[in-house]
Length: 590
Image (cartoon, rainbow, N blue to C red; front, top):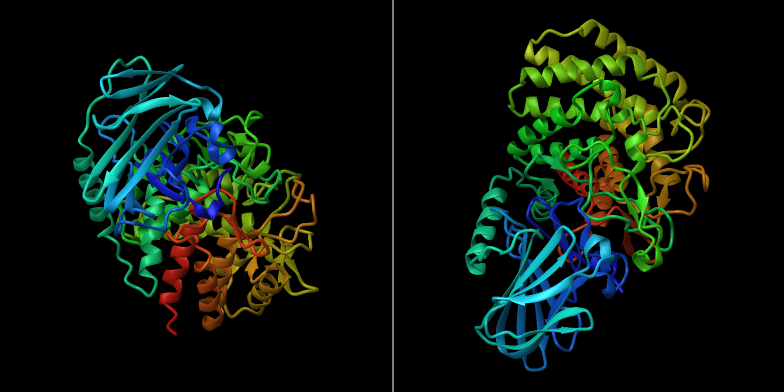
């Protein structure tokens, strides 16, 4: 049975990522890409669906674990009755093929270790044929093959559908295991030097992290979040995935289980904004290129979500052979959000382009032409209802957040035209900005209660209305802003944290409830600080930070009653909000 969601660590190579439990089991890994079928899916089922455990033969969780410095190299230590041992897990940046390396190191005494590798391709569905060849165990099924290489002194044998090794490691000894994926039609796997790959992986991450500009009170948490966000980028194209997992539930046993292994324009825009604030500009240029390729064509066909290489077709299907995380079904593959209209994404994209330009990135002509096309579409469509930020699986509505972000698009476009001097219909954009502003004030504000609501004509609260102040739509001292912030704080409270919205059960097209949404809790901290309540903001920020696991990783949601993280893990949206709130609070003084 899979561990708690917060028990998992992340390792990756900027093209895919693995989740490693406290017991030394790799329970999730998709190869060769984030959105490829998994070869380890125990996370969504049990050991029979694929995983790879290395740890003491007697089992048990590690005593301590950590990332080595500012890297994505994981070190897990066990204290055994006869010694101490460490397993170092990492995925080197690819020169050719994806590899997962696990180096077992004796720290003191001696320890009997056991490796159990159970490959199950196609999301836990296909058991491969396994053969032995030249110090490798080779597993093949359909288009996939995985090659396990172990040192000559380590014996491997088949047992219960797994490739198993049992060996003793003594103080000072290092035993490397190397798992390489490649297409099954290739006949040999390249040999690599595990120790050299470890050194180069550490150097790569430390060199990247050294560019971080943040020097505030929460540097460790901010840098770990930025490293996590970098790990969710797909280096070949510049796309940024929302999370490396699918179908980790927002309610244990519920149906709110989604595939987040894709690139949402909203999430990737916000991720890029956080990386830019941290001082990382290379990612912005790569994302610009990805965006231009992904949305090429009719601006009216812009999707909310794409594949990591810009794929448009992401049909949502179910995997009925997987029982789901702790019985949470269905397990979804693909995402039907590709068919939704989410008007807020235009605002997020234009806002990020404006931030990148302000950070010193040159405005390329092709980017400007894209922006003009996006604004032409938005000018004629912002009055439409949509599914909104939360991807409601019910009827379309006029969501206040979507309208506010349409205002953001017009506002930032006007600023960009002024900053760059490039030709633009600035008068039209100003007129659109004024029209959206008036429309939201007329229809998105409940004058009886004095607060902004989730959608026109509704009474439900929505944490996304905090963007009324976060975006600059209204000034922080506006009484309507202050009352809305207070209403979100009090009306959406869930054990000291913040729900997304107060929609009645089933009102969003789904059954069941969900946990507190961690990004919304960070947004509330931002809004409290903006409205002059810095002490409250810092207290809330500290409370949310404390929910991170021992490695500083956060999922999408949190259940205050069960005191467990929920949803896909780790979640870009959450870590983006953490970074932005840290920057905001460092600018507010004490």
